[in-house]
Image (tube, rainbow, N blue to C red; front, side, top):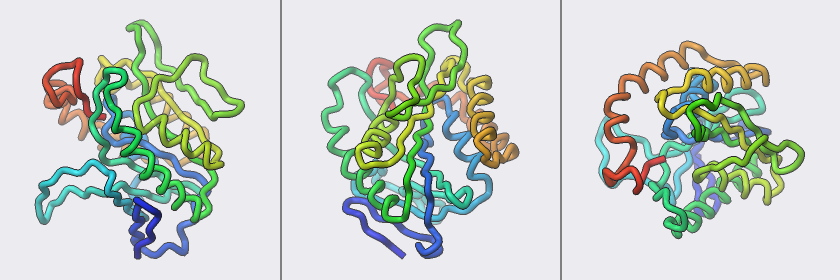
Length: 246
């Protein structure tokens, strides 16, 4: 079954009648540091994807393979009666220099707005974006910070890459209860285990089930790719000052 919301299409696995989430937690699968990926997969556990999101604005490679194809969709997985995890599986590369991505907003806004329209149509009221931010000094310890556009303010400014600031901003303007959950991390550790522990404990304290076996397997998968990822450093140009993947 498909529902269309402007530039975003929702493909339902088992029909849309039971899809009534009050809250969506969003993360980007490819963030360096991998804490959102590990936590997101652990909260999803072995639950099956409920909805696939397809849009003309997604960043999808031209080539693919069958039968083991790379799925271009973003996915939504219902993790409890009221909560859905939205996994952003691909995002356009961007240049880290200021004022160097003039097309980013034009690509991002229609798709993220229309996804939020689709969620609102199914009763969603709250959007939380899980992301990370690198510590600027080696001696800084991991810190979990929350910003909710209203009463909750972080102890310092959050410097966020897209779409981690764009989607909560749009959600807030559309009337959702909107927030950013940001963990600071030591990027030099590849996976900052102390930062990961803070995020894990946060979601457990919020009452979510956390699949420790899934976390272990995801960490191992990422570590198996550590040498390759460190060599490429997610750089598309070979210059650390130029283009980086998410």
